[in-house]
Every structure is written in C-alpha cells, then in structure tokens.
Length: 362
Ligand code: SF4
Image 1 (cartoon, rainbow, N blue to C red):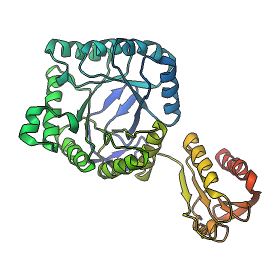
Image 2: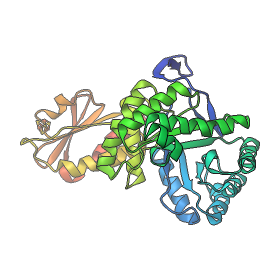
Image 3: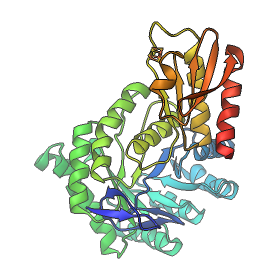
Image 4: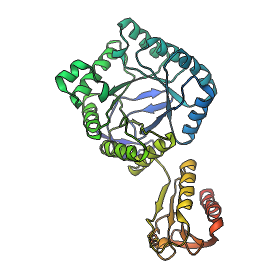
C-alpha cells in the first residue's frame, strides 16, 4: 500500500500499488482514479440498440462498456460498433478463442477471457499474440461460482480456491510473456469477495476489477455491493469497478459513482435532502427526484440541498452551495444558507435549475 499522488503532486487517497495497465489511453491501476464499467443488456449483434446503450452509459460516467460475445454474429458486429463510437469496449468471451481473435481483429479495446478455459496451448498463444500485436489487455475473471473442481475439493468454496484458480490463469499468460493483465475475483457473498480481493492484493501485482456478482435487484443488490466493496475501496483496493444489478445500468453507474464519491475518488454532485417530517408543506419528493436526475446527468461538482421546510431547511443545509426549502405551495431558494428567491410550487424545478446554472457559469 502506498499513497499515490495526482499530477500536481498533491496526495490523494491511499491506493494499493499495482502494475499500470493501459486500455488505449485509459489507465487502470496505480492511480487514484477507479475506472467505471458496466455491461450492455442487448445482444451485441443488435448493433443500433447496443450503440445507443454504449453512448447512454458513457454519458452517465462509464469509462468502459463490456459486450457479451456469444457467437460470430456478435464478434463481427464489433467492427461496425467500433466505427460508430469512441467509447472503450470490452469483449466478454467464454471458451471460444476464435471469437476472441475476431473481436481483437475488429478493434475491441480489452478482452475478458480465462486462458485456462480456452483449451489447447496453441489456441491460447494465438489470442495472446493478437493481444500483444494490438496492445490490448486481458481481464481474467475468477468467479466463486465456477471454480475448478479439483480446487474446490482441496479448498472448498473459499478465498484460497479463488486465488489458486487466478494463479493458474495468470501463469498461462505470464509463461507466454504477457503481463497486461487485470484480475477480478467476484463472489455473490460480500464477505467472500472481501477476503478474496484482500488476498489477491497481497498476492498479485496486477490491477483488480472489483464487484459483487449476482448481487440481486436494485435495492438489495446495491446494499450488498456497497457492503462488499466499501471495505475494499476504503483499504485502497480496486482499480476498476462494476456494480452488477438486475435492473437499469444507469442505477449501477449511479451506485458506483456514489460509492466512489463517498471516498473522494469520484467528483460527483452531492445531494443533501432531509427525511421530511410534519413541517413539510409542499410536494418535495417529485422535485427531489427531478433534481437527482438532473445532477446525475450533468456531473456538476456542487453540493445541492432539497429541504422540506423554510423553518429549518436553510439552516440545516447551510453547507450546501445552493438549496431549496419548501413553504406553503412555494419554495425558497437559498445560496450558502442565505435566501435569495421565493418561487411558486409549479415553477420550482425550472427556477432552481436556472439558479444552479448561474452558479456554474460564475
Ligand atoms: S428540514 Fe423541515 S421538513 Fe425537513 S426534516 Fe427538518 S424540520 Fe422536517
């Protein structure tokens, strides 16, 4: 573990020291930035839908978007997709080295494949040579749910089994003189993931892609992911992240951003809101949702408050750059605790955004 520094020489967060792996010009590892990932929902051969997804996720903060490559139609589609977007793409491939070769030839930026599952060493060599030639990294993804049988017999479903599995895959690549490796050791149980990633950070010099797999539907999955990933992030572990939810990818990205922002690893708008009580006398919740959506989309580095009442709101949210507090069918806009405007309920959102834009323009 070391303290890393930003370009101006200021200390930022404690982060584990790792090898630096490049995905084109995007650095993974050995820095304060934790790279954000998500995965497309559509089958990759449905080019227009996939491109739309990719661009949407990029506007919501995704640095990398992973695409499932199930067959040749998917692998071939990458050529057109790459020609129509600048977003960095990861090809997710199981077993079939030929699909990896097509994906690499078609310009994909990173491959997720486990060399130990490819089969003959000659096939693995072909994939590694293609990656070397195009200078693209490989992510090895160990999953607690699919550990090799012999390792399960010896270690049971455990961090040791996961690490031994990762070692096997890593060794195959290292023996071929390939080191542009990123590792993931996902588990559905947060404690197992925490243990495995901690041991991985001690064992390997490669950057780690962290996540809790099959975390569940949005609410439960977010909580489970935060329970598993926050201890790692706090410890400086994790160079790239995906929160996996059964639901909207936007929710995944927002949850990941909020988690990183809580540790000052992502510059995100901070939204303060009160829990409301009997003093609430305007329709706050729809406004709160509108403001939240706006902030998530605009990436504004401000602290914004939406408060229930004018009696306590401006005071309780004094630290906010700008805030709104409800009166009777109206709202008060305050800047750094000082009231600057009174607005009718029906115009609240528009006027509030107007005032936020004024602060941004300053
Ligand atoms: S700001 Fe007002 S409405 Fe919100 S919790 Fe405090 S007292 Fe209640």
